[in-house]
Length: 241
Image (cartoon, rainbow, N blue to C red; front, side):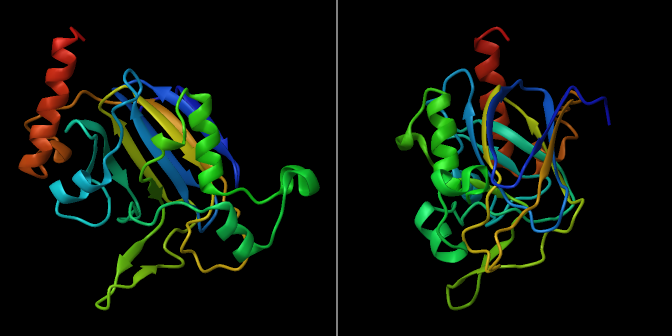
């Protein structure tokens, strides 16, 4: 894999947002077991376009995300593709934690009392980063929970799978559009662990090889994927990019 052009270690409870150019890889690596990174994606050049969870799952006949899947926008384009994945399952139906749920599960903390050791939650983390990016709470949509596995049983119960993410697990996205990523390294809301998870996650940005439509597994996975890629390529062709 090519040289790393940027990297960051996202500490437990931390948040981050930033724009990353299309044609780059973003590799996430869990530095300890039990990681969960909640992620929002937007078109960095037009933030009214953002990740669409229902269309992503419906178009690819799946309830989870792994290598070969794409993350579709609400305009039918591809924001990112999953090109490498050591876990085989990432959740996008479980949502993110709230302040109330975090306090109920792990105990009430506050910045005024615990300072930087207070237990952060996904909703507040993402909301804070959205404001930094010129967005707001109404722009908070479904998240992708990297490293977490959630499924529904025969009775319709939503089940979180403990122990799914070992230390060193990684997943790599290839950005198909200039994308704004908004991240929160906070527990999955269904994680039954009674101790606040504390896995740092490494984030690395690397150049990606050009997409070959004739052989690329993400393009070829479903006819719906190809159409979404074609919409994306047309978007940039019309912009002269």
